Length: 257
Length: 333
Image 1 (tube, chains in turn blue, cyan):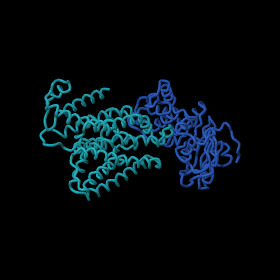
Image 2 (image 1 turned 90 degrees about the vertical axis):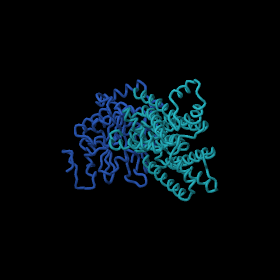
Image 3 (image 1 turned 135 degrees about the vertical axis):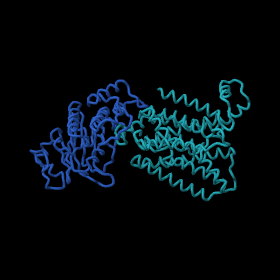
Image 4 (image 1 turned 90 degrees about the horizontal axis):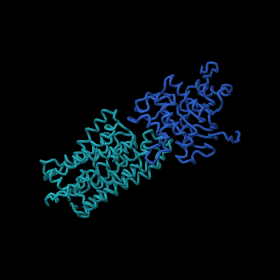
């Protein structure tokens, strides 16, 4: 294992094992730079959500070190961590009678006053972010009435308003139709490259991960592999994703056969 | 804005109505004279100053406190049926009162409506509620999430209630009657000093609740996301618990456990204002709570009856239809 420190690494995972009382997945070594879009793939129950939650600081992890900007995740206070990292759960609860604007503006938590009121500068930022994710027409509507695709984009906007360096998203496309999946992932790609943010999301859509992501973290059934899509195809890393070794990844068709 | 004016006007109307009604009906004109400082009869002053005005102030404070408290519990637990007492605070208060009342009777002393009895009961209830909160605070930092806290609180409440039942079973009939009367709730009998204590505690609880608004709004996004926003969940949980004790614990100490208002009023506020923002919900629930509590107390003393109906009976009759409406039309939640 190389021990050299890369100054460009926003996020580093060294020999991380996940789980609290017992280890559910171990030996994770991975890095992320700013501007990178990274997909986490793996079979159900492998621990993709646990990995994201551990990185976000919501969950304690069993061993190893997760560092953000060179500091251990656990050494940050919740307030400090919220500037570094934001986390979008796979399904956020919907609240009746909460306007889309208020929902997205919640991302300003750390920059609002003691009552949660934001200044005009921040209001402008919230407005422009809602426009950016394509929800301008819904701005004063009830957020609980949005469709699943629109709601997911609203959650992404909220995370963008938080303005953290790293954005973590747990299966952002899980409940979306094909058209919404494509727009959502393209939006993430655009954010990563234009705003120099690190975006890490879990997905079951391998094809999209290979086509659009800079890197993929494969949580295989026996080991963790990190690499660019091309490297991983070369190494036949995707063949190790599932326990069933008869499933082989076809690099031409981008699917399992 | 329109609703605020409407609620405020209804509050004034119900307060006046409340002051008029009772075992003796005081005409409106006399009440207006009383407030404008014109000469009123000694008779009216003797009814208003020691009895009616303290009672209506107590009702207002209770309504405000229980509604604001219920709102915070519902948001913290994301549960539309959470109420101020869901974590066992009223059971704790009940245990305090039970120990006080039945403890005295064990020594052969019967507590009647003396000053010692009323002050002692309030203090015992407050200590009981406070003890439960201390226990919850100690446990809350070790619990994974708010749901675990909810389960712990409900279990704690059940255990405490079981102990109270055992004490009731073993106690004398006169002590039992004092205790049962306390559980029925009452706004009367508070002297000015007691009202000042209640007022200060409720005011402190309200101040802390207003400070909680920002975190309550963040909690609407879900616990995991609130954490990611930078909310210190443990801290927030503790602040909400302390506010709950100051509000519901104090009201319970002085007036007994008053049910249903704490569940129902936050929902009425949501229905009227159609806004999930606690900057709107908290003041509106406070105002509505005052109106509904004064209204309930007015019904409790409608003329044509010798005494006063226990306030808990009335609050249940008003609160239950509202709660049923919520369950049947869950779109309001």
